[in-house]
Image (cartoon, rainbow, N blue to C red; front, side, top):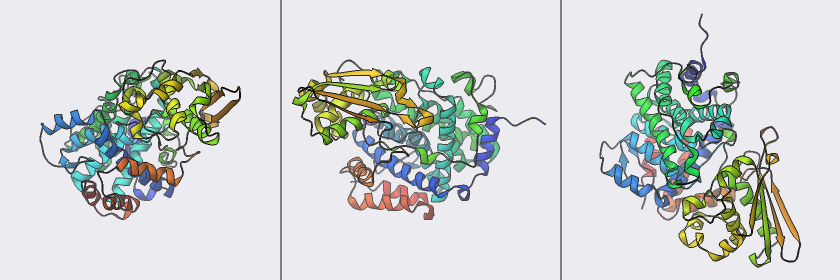
Length: 458
């Protein structure tokens, strides 16, 4: 008898897993990431550089009113909703992620799943189930393919996100094992995304997330129509693994499948900047607050972080726009030392050209050291050392940034994030209603009740 490969095993797992199989930790985590995703997508809709051009483009395409375009009071075709909501969720670099998978599962999985759920009006339990499964596929795939995927210049969010989004959407739209495998195959042929967008053209980076969500729901819709995707797309000789990394550890990918769920390892971001900068931001904020630093006291700042962070964010020049600023380690450290808190307004043109930030920026020296990343020791951090004009030296090391499972954000920080993400476009009544519906999601008989509330904007 032929041994089943990884694609068929993961397809069977998706088909057979029900809400009752999940531990409470996974269910709670699914609601946490859903609420976080909705909030950052609203913020992206209102503030994202790419949001308005895409809005104009897709508005001209028309189509059936099927799924909610988050941030607006409109419904658009489901595949359009998945793309637009994926883009807006990633537009401000404020969305969730997984440090070992080196990517952002939420902005691929959740928009595809929500759009699919509205098509068939499924229950809250079905939404939770699909989201947890989508995250599981993303995290397992991203973890076993990295760091090779990252080192080759691929954006995990786009590459693994398409497969994960297809897994989640297929669980809703075509939950049979063969249909799920077809959906994974169709999505696998569309997987894409390059890390070159972290060096220039950063405003287009969110499109990698949106395309992953779009590819996922499109794959599920085609599979529902009995379109056959390639079999064994992950492991076949011309398949996903061969194309992106050349090899993998299938045993690690399938380890404890159905026994351990990893969604509760997802981090929540507090700053709208590349995650690789967050440990240094946290350390800088600590020094600013603890020592009541004034920039006139600062003579020199040295920041040491791990090689991957250095590769993506160590820039020698001040950023020219908000996209560049989010991927500029020295800029965000300077920002933290100037004003302590970092929010959406801090990436405006006014802040980028702030002479105080510029003054500190050119006092910063960046270093790379492998000791600041150790997966087995739960280290992915940074060291910030400030030399004062009086010769005194201050330093703070962060082993992990705030928001990780091992270093969680406090409730006030999470609440403050929701408030500034939702902004003035939502009333307090709408915001509270969305929060309540997501917190009680497993009791919701129709996801359309939630998405209807999402459209209740000013």
